[in-house]
Length: 368
Image (cartoon, rainbow, N blue to C red; front, side, top):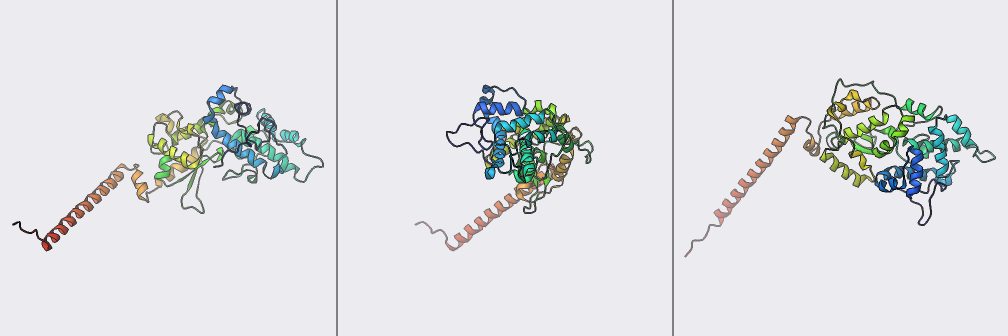
């Protein structure tokens, strides 16, 4: 994961600063978030919630840095304020074409050959800052993404409705996603490599790697972003989409599971800044764990559950953690204990035999 890029020491960053200069003051954070999340945050709100907000601003900083690489020759806008103006046009329901016409006025004269790209890249960056979805040409951002997602026409609501449809193609009849189905066990039992992502579109996406024997599961971890964008959700995201996404995180990282929480802490220490809010979400009720209660993420959950159920332990580590089949699990540990006791008894017998041989060759001398 990319690190936050701060402005040079002593340099004041405000909304008129270039987008690659990371805002670090409570005032600037407040102004940015009030536009992006349709919130009315105060300075006090921001200062007391910095740990929670750090995750989003890590993403924001990475996007801003990439936008002005090579002197920003591929983008027409420069400042935080200008991109927030595009965001405001996006959330008020203007179409891509209407926004394009507005931004196009900033293209320098004479019109360069890459004028269309300059405008499109500015609009795509504003959309990425608003949605945490990697919209646009992959060459213009550095975060990994599995699929190209283009917003070419219509409003942002049209775009989101097209890309986040309800999924009911695959199904597991009346299946409950039991408590063993969590992110820790996907890693330790199913052998899946967890790749934490800042790209919402990659959430729960399972893919096989050409250069790695382990399959990869992408998990969008920025729960604080999802919670804070709730107001905006009612305007642009499909109904219940954000709520369901939060429930998938609560499903994979239940807050009452100490093993999962401890595993997540180790992930944070090795992977960088992960959003701790992901393991602090409300606990799901039993009825909320049924697959039919998920619509937007159902197909990906079905595929993931099938991969989990079909995974056979292939290493001692996986055997040790696999409690899906209790008879098999206890048989494994009985076999381990039996093996250890057999080895211990054999060792004791060997030691006794060695002592007997030793005494036979060197008998104890009689006392005078």
